[in-house]
Length: 218
Image 1 (spheres, rainbow, N blue to C red):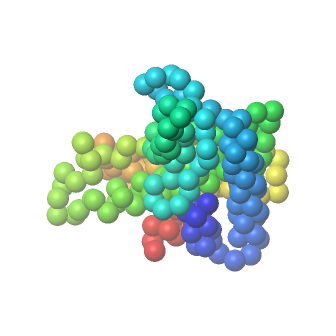
Image 2: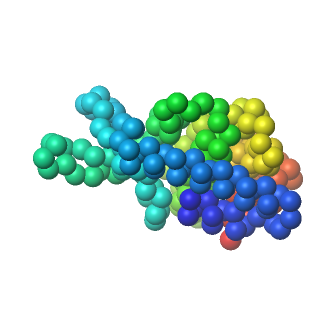
Protein backbone atom coordinates (compact mmCIF):
# COMPACT_ATOMS: atom_id res chain seq x y z
CA UNK A 1 0.00 0.00 0.00
CA UNK A 2 2.89 2.34 0.73
CA UNK A 3 4.07 2.19 -2.88
CA UNK A 4 0.51 2.72 -4.07
CA UNK A 5 0.13 5.79 -1.86
CA UNK A 6 3.36 7.21 -3.30
CA UNK A 7 2.00 6.64 -6.80
CA UNK A 8 -1.31 8.26 -5.91
CA UNK A 9 0.48 11.34 -4.64
CA UNK A 10 1.56 12.13 -8.20
CA UNK A 11 -1.98 12.31 -9.59
CA UNK A 12 -3.45 15.71 -10.49
CA UNK A 13 -6.27 17.04 -8.29
CA UNK A 14 -9.92 16.67 -9.18
CA UNK A 15 -12.18 13.85 -10.19
CA UNK A 16 -9.39 11.58 -11.42
CA UNK A 17 -7.51 11.87 -8.14
CA UNK A 18 -10.71 11.20 -6.18
CA UNK A 19 -11.43 8.08 -8.22
CA UNK A 20 -7.88 6.81 -7.82
CA UNK A 21 -8.16 7.41 -4.07
CA UNK A 22 -11.42 5.45 -4.02
CA UNK A 23 -9.77 2.57 -5.88
CA UNK A 24 -6.93 2.63 -3.37
CA UNK A 25 -9.44 2.39 -0.53
CA UNK A 26 -11.02 -0.60 -2.26
CA UNK A 27 -7.59 -2.20 -2.61
CA UNK A 28 -6.89 -1.60 1.08
CA UNK A 29 -10.22 -3.23 1.94
CA UNK A 30 -9.24 -6.38 0.07
CA UNK A 31 -5.80 -6.40 1.68
CA UNK A 32 -7.38 -6.16 5.13
CA UNK A 33 -9.65 -9.13 4.42
CA UNK A 34 -6.65 -11.02 3.07
CA UNK A 35 -4.79 -10.34 6.32
CA UNK A 36 -7.83 -11.34 8.37
CA UNK A 37 -8.05 -14.62 6.46
CA UNK A 38 -4.33 -15.18 7.03
CA UNK A 39 -4.75 -14.48 10.76
CA UNK A 40 -7.48 -17.12 10.80
CA UNK A 41 -5.15 -19.60 9.07
CA UNK A 42 -7.50 -19.87 6.10
CA UNK A 43 -4.81 -19.39 3.44
CA UNK A 44 -1.93 -21.53 2.25
CA UNK A 45 0.93 -21.16 -0.20
CA UNK A 46 2.61 -23.98 -2.10
CA UNK A 47 6.33 -23.67 -2.74
CA UNK A 48 7.30 -24.84 -6.20
CA UNK A 49 10.17 -26.93 -4.85
CA UNK A 50 8.17 -29.03 -2.39
CA UNK A 51 4.55 -28.55 -3.43
CA UNK A 52 3.56 -28.75 0.23
CA UNK A 53 1.04 -26.13 1.43
CA UNK A 54 2.33 -23.75 4.09
CA UNK A 55 0.20 -21.36 6.16
CA UNK A 56 0.14 -17.78 4.93
CA UNK A 57 0.64 -15.21 7.69
CA UNK A 58 0.06 -12.07 5.66
CA UNK A 59 1.48 -9.79 3.00
CA UNK A 60 4.39 -7.53 3.89
CA UNK A 61 4.09 -4.15 2.18
CA UNK A 62 6.83 -2.20 3.95
CA UNK A 63 10.05 -1.17 2.25
CA UNK A 64 11.17 -1.89 -1.28
CA UNK A 65 10.76 -5.68 -1.12
CA UNK A 66 7.10 -6.54 -0.56
CA UNK A 67 6.24 -10.19 -0.30
CA UNK A 68 4.10 -12.94 1.11
CA UNK A 69 4.83 -13.95 4.71
CA UNK A 70 4.66 -17.74 5.03
CA UNK A 71 5.18 -20.04 8.04
CA UNK A 72 7.63 -22.81 7.23
CA UNK A 73 9.61 -25.46 9.08
CA UNK A 74 8.63 -27.95 11.80
CA UNK A 75 5.52 -27.30 13.88
CA UNK A 76 7.51 -27.00 17.11
CA UNK A 77 10.03 -24.50 15.74
CA UNK A 78 8.46 -22.75 12.76
CA UNK A 79 9.99 -19.71 11.10
CA UNK A 80 8.65 -16.98 8.85
CA UNK A 81 9.84 -16.80 5.27
CA UNK A 82 8.99 -13.91 2.95
CA UNK A 83 8.30 -14.92 -0.65
CA UNK A 84 9.31 -11.84 -2.71
CA UNK A 85 6.73 -10.34 -5.02
CA UNK A 86 9.05 -11.15 -7.92
CA UNK A 87 8.29 -14.84 -7.33
CA UNK A 88 4.53 -14.23 -7.35
CA UNK A 89 4.26 -12.57 -10.75
CA UNK A 90 2.22 -13.97 -13.61
CA UNK A 91 -0.48 -16.59 -13.02
CA UNK A 92 0.64 -17.15 -9.42
CA UNK A 93 -0.34 -13.59 -8.53
CA UNK A 94 -4.04 -14.19 -9.09
CA UNK A 95 -4.01 -17.62 -7.46
CA UNK A 96 -2.19 -16.42 -4.33
CA UNK A 97 -4.36 -13.35 -3.75
CA UNK A 98 -7.70 -15.10 -3.68
CA UNK A 99 -10.03 -15.44 -0.69
CA UNK A 100 -12.16 -18.47 0.15
CA UNK A 101 -15.84 -17.91 -0.61
CA UNK A 102 -15.28 -14.66 -2.50
CA UNK A 103 -15.87 -14.09 -6.19
CA UNK A 104 -12.72 -13.96 -8.31
CA UNK A 105 -14.07 -10.88 -10.09
CA UNK A 106 -14.69 -8.83 -6.92
CA UNK A 107 -13.96 -5.16 -7.78
CA UNK A 108 -11.79 -4.52 -4.73
CA UNK A 109 -9.65 -7.56 -5.56
CA UNK A 110 -9.14 -6.17 -9.06
CA UNK A 111 -8.17 -2.83 -7.52
CA UNK A 112 -5.65 -4.48 -5.18
CA UNK A 113 -4.06 -6.51 -7.97
CA UNK A 114 -3.94 -3.46 -10.24
CA UNK A 115 -2.23 -1.21 -7.69
CA UNK A 116 0.15 -3.99 -6.70
CA UNK A 117 1.09 -4.69 -10.31
CA UNK A 118 1.50 -1.03 -11.27
CA UNK A 119 3.76 -0.43 -8.27
CA UNK A 120 5.76 -3.55 -9.09
CA UNK A 121 6.29 -2.45 -12.69
CA UNK A 122 7.24 1.04 -11.60
CA UNK A 123 9.94 -0.31 -9.28
CA UNK A 124 11.28 -2.48 -12.11
CA UNK A 125 11.12 0.36 -14.63
CA UNK A 126 12.99 2.74 -12.36
CA UNK A 127 15.75 0.21 -11.78
CA UNK A 128 15.99 -0.54 -15.49
CA UNK A 129 16.05 3.10 -16.63
CA UNK A 130 18.68 3.94 -14.01
CA UNK A 131 20.97 1.30 -15.48
CA UNK A 132 20.68 2.48 -19.10
CA UNK A 133 23.64 4.69 -20.01
CA UNK A 134 23.88 6.78 -23.15
CA UNK A 135 27.66 6.26 -23.22
CA UNK A 136 27.29 2.49 -22.98
CA UNK A 137 25.42 1.20 -26.07
CA UNK A 138 25.08 -2.32 -24.61
CA UNK A 139 23.46 -1.19 -21.37
CA UNK A 140 19.87 -2.36 -20.97
CA UNK A 141 20.34 -5.14 -23.52
CA UNK A 142 20.84 -8.91 -23.47
CA UNK A 143 21.37 -9.98 -19.83
CA UNK A 144 20.39 -6.48 -18.70
CA UNK A 145 17.14 -6.53 -20.70
CA UNK A 146 13.88 -5.58 -19.06
CA UNK A 147 12.58 -8.82 -17.61
CA UNK A 148 8.94 -8.09 -16.81
CA UNK A 149 6.11 -8.75 -19.27
CA UNK A 150 2.64 -7.18 -19.53
CA UNK A 151 0.64 -10.43 -19.14
CA UNK A 152 -0.79 -9.56 -15.72
CA UNK A 153 -1.66 -6.07 -16.93
CA UNK A 154 -3.64 -7.50 -19.84
CA UNK A 155 -5.57 -9.71 -17.41
CA UNK A 156 -6.23 -6.73 -15.12
CA UNK A 157 -7.40 -4.60 -18.03
CA UNK A 158 -10.12 -7.19 -18.65
CA UNK A 159 -10.91 -7.51 -14.93
CA UNK A 160 -11.37 -3.75 -14.54
CA UNK A 161 -13.47 -3.62 -17.69
CA UNK A 162 -16.05 -5.81 -15.94
CA UNK A 163 -15.55 -4.44 -12.40
CA UNK A 164 -18.42 -1.94 -12.76
CA UNK A 165 -17.12 0.32 -9.98
CA UNK A 166 -17.14 4.16 -10.10
CA UNK A 167 -13.34 4.17 -10.20
CA UNK A 168 -12.72 1.19 -12.48
CA UNK A 169 -12.38 3.12 -15.77
CA UNK A 170 -9.86 5.54 -14.25
CA UNK A 171 -7.75 2.74 -12.82
CA UNK A 172 -8.04 0.84 -16.09
CA UNK A 173 -6.47 3.80 -17.89
CA UNK A 174 -3.54 3.64 -15.46
CA UNK A 175 -3.15 -0.06 -16.22
CA UNK A 176 -3.12 0.68 -19.94
CA UNK A 177 -0.52 3.40 -19.48
CA UNK A 178 1.66 0.96 -17.55
CA UNK A 179 1.20 -1.59 -20.33
CA UNK A 180 2.50 0.92 -22.87
CA UNK A 181 5.53 1.65 -20.71
CA UNK A 182 6.33 -2.03 -20.15
CA UNK A 183 5.94 -2.84 -23.85
CA UNK A 184 8.20 0.08 -24.76
CA UNK A 185 10.94 -0.99 -22.34
CA UNK A 186 10.79 -4.56 -23.61
CA UNK A 187 11.05 -3.29 -27.19
CA UNK A 188 14.06 -1.13 -26.35
CA UNK A 189 15.81 -3.96 -24.51
CA UNK A 190 15.47 -6.18 -27.59
CA UNK A 191 16.91 -3.51 -29.93
CA UNK A 192 13.55 -2.53 -31.44
CA UNK A 193 14.32 1.13 -30.92
CA UNK A 194 11.81 2.57 -33.40
CA UNK A 195 9.00 0.54 -31.85
CA UNK A 196 10.08 1.64 -28.37
CA UNK A 197 10.13 5.30 -29.43
CA UNK A 198 6.68 5.06 -30.99
CA UNK A 199 5.24 3.45 -27.87
CA UNK A 200 6.77 6.08 -25.59
CA UNK A 201 5.46 8.88 -27.82
CA UNK A 202 2.02 7.29 -27.70
CA UNK A 203 2.23 7.04 -23.90
CA UNK A 204 3.14 10.70 -23.53
CA UNK A 205 0.48 11.77 -26.04
CA UNK A 206 -2.38 9.66 -24.68
CA UNK A 207 -1.52 9.48 -20.97
CA UNK A 208 0.70 12.47 -20.08
CA UNK A 209 -0.64 12.54 -16.52
CA UNK A 210 -0.47 8.79 -15.88
CA UNK A 211 1.04 7.77 -12.57
CA UNK A 212 3.93 5.89 -14.20
CA UNK A 213 4.80 8.95 -16.31
CA UNK A 214 4.70 11.34 -13.37
CA UNK A 215 6.62 8.96 -11.13
CA UNK A 216 9.42 8.39 -13.67
CA UNK A 217 9.70 12.12 -14.23
CA UNK A 218 10.17 12.81 -10.52
